[in-house]
Amino acid sequence: MSHFLPENDAVLTAARGLAQAHAGLIEVNSSPLYLRARDADPARTVALVSGGGSGHEPLHTGLLGRGGLDAVCPGEIFASPHNRQIYEASAAAAKRDGVLHIVKNYTGDVINFQIAAERLRHDGIPVATVLVEDDLATDSADSATGRRGTAATVVVEKLLGAAADRGATLEDLADLGRRVVERSRSIAVAARAQTSPTTLAPAFALDQDTLDYGVGIHGERGIRTIARPATGDLVRRMTDDLLDALPEGPDEVLALVNGLGATTELELNAIAVLLGDELTARGLRPVLVVPGTFTAALDMAGFSLTLTRLEEGWAELWTTPTRTPLVLPRPSRTPDRSEAAAPTATQTTATNSPVRTPRTGGEAGDRALLDRYALTVTQVRDNLTKLDQLVGDGDFGDNLAGGVRRAVKLADETGADGTTALAEAFLNDVGGTSGPLFGLFFQHLAAASPAEGGTPSVAALAEAAAAGHAAVHRVGGAVPGDCTLVDALAPAAESLAASRDAETEAPLTEAAQAAIRGALATASLRPRRGRASYVGDHALGVPDPGALAVALLFMALADIHEPATAPRLPAPGHITVP
Image (cartoon, rainbow, N blue to C red; front, side):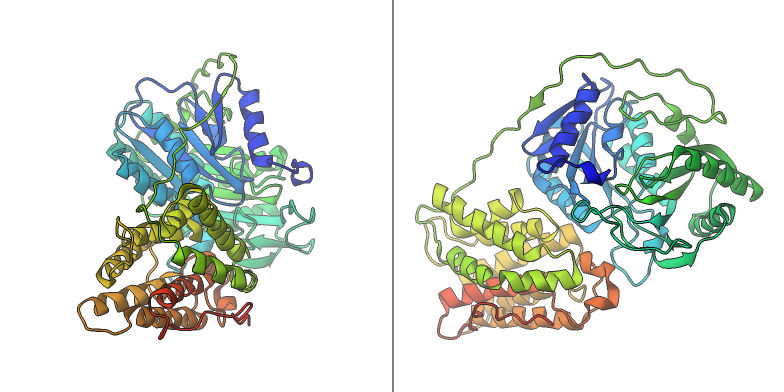
């Protein structure tokens, strides 16, 4: 599949193609990109909004319409959608009683959906979230990240879609979603990695007689590589692992047999029979055994199994007809139900969200911090990228530099205060995980600048740093010691708070020094959150790039306001890469 992606705007082009194939059912908003159902059930009072990285289709977009989702936000391939996409889609789809976000537990997805929720609440729109976390391979007490969200997302979206069309409230839907997640577990295996859209080669190599056990839907390697067993033995092993982890409850279960992109219908149907027999032999009643490709990993050759213990009425919710691009199988074990009427073929049109102009600061518009930070980030961008390649996906330096460039352009064009321009640029235009978090911090930092211009007081900066730290923690959940940007932000905020009531000669210098110490100390930490948490001990010895970026900001603040005592800003390329 990834051999034939368009070179430009692949995700947008695919979204337009889906809408074209289902005329009258879906509309596409191109900037920011989201898809919206055109035919909502009039009984629905709460909108359901989901999304995530592209490459998992038909996940999310396949369940767009009656009996499913109201809006879907697709990110780039294997990358989270931007908070602006989610915010705009949710605002456009919101019903009388608000919006429910259905979010897979990946750091970027969680952070961007939470930032969007903060923005919606600020607008007075009620929001609740269901976090899907079902993957056994990442169920570790050593990680604060928790289980990944994978194919159980399909079960959550289908059941909530049916319940929403019956007029369920926001609170009822959130409670139902959380119960479905609690009663669901998944595990996946692969015989061949997905094709990289960049190299057109498998993302990792596997011998012909081995399997990766516990792979992720973004092509993450499994928790172990095993000798390839007979298919029946493999299904038995996966069933045992799922049942060992599945919470106690009723004997009735829903079983999802999900292809990862290159597994044939022939194989999935056969596996479904093997799984049904294994469950029956253990005294369970597989009310629903559903084979198909629902949550792909591009063209990975593999499959996942998901088990959900069913409460009363859930099977009926699953078999409720839908009007969505994906028609979910309704096995013969369930009562027969009539198909939904086909959608009316009408012209599908693209819509555009309202353009929001950035706010400006005071009339004077202080640019010193923005210009100093822009210079520093330009100098160290390449080394920040190299550090991120060691512990993440290697895009941090470019994302940070790109966001600062956008802020400079915004300030030039609108006269916005420097920190206000940083907040707008990072909240609205910088993707990934850390970009929107920096945007939240910059948003609070901007509040410290006096409306009439001039130098912010230490008390105002202390209050802004504390509020920014609280917002970042509220959205991302990180605490000092998790090896994230919080390891620099928290000590800097604490240092400023201590200086607020004491007669400190150089409070910003001390805050910068605290941030530097916190950032450098991350090299000795085993990451518990963020992308680096997936590489475990491989991150040891590498300082967190986000924490370093925070330290550089406080150094720039000190250099502007306390030049005699401020720590020196780095010369080009000064940050050391292990």
